[in-house]
Length: 296
Image (cartoon, rainbow, N blue to C red; front, top):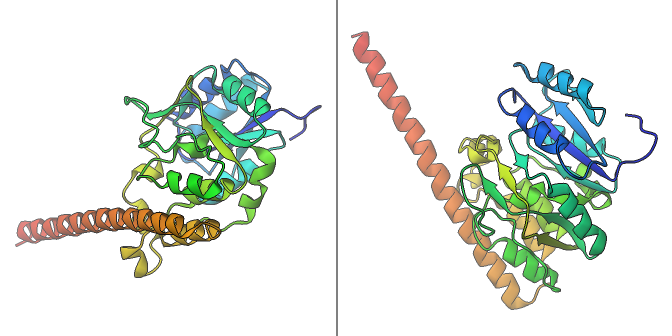
């Protein structure tokens, strides 16, 4: 990419087979009241009309930089690609099925410009058709002067980690390009590690509406990251290790509270994936029985 000058904001949009939603997601960004940004779209070798849609939009707006991967490089690598391509003061990921209020960038840039102790800012996050909920959506303000209290608060309950789609200070994300990410909760791990550097704000205005069809909303995500027997019972093992290491300077009370919350998170995830896999196995047996009866 070539630019006469650096944009203040870079937005990275990884996409795969997003023909139904990508146009609306891009339009919600192009209509932002804050316009000093570049949009980096990385098409992960889509097999639908995503390429045609993105190319057409790129021809109409010079802020869009469209890349098509020759082969599917995987979701994690595609998220890394758009981050690595960004050369800006601020950066955010934008999913290909999310939409933002017109003032999202203006509000978040203004806040970060005025609050150097904060590493990220976002607006109230919600799923399509639902009301915002800072606990359930995981986008609550984390601003305690004690880093460990912020990490503990982040694990208050199971949530959607809407915080991942914040506007970040780009320079603080560089380390993430060199981190392993193929484990359940890698997006949570990013926030945990960033909390060691700065605080996060959830503003009162604007909004982010997340699509319901992302990989994290599908129960098959458990099998995708289940690489060993232990992950049946401790699905968030890698995340838990990172969280405990990040809070190694915490006092005894804080460590015990964090450990309890991580145990609760893993228990809920283990129960959820076991029930899901049991239902799948039961359905498979039923289909097998029906097939045999038809051929009997």
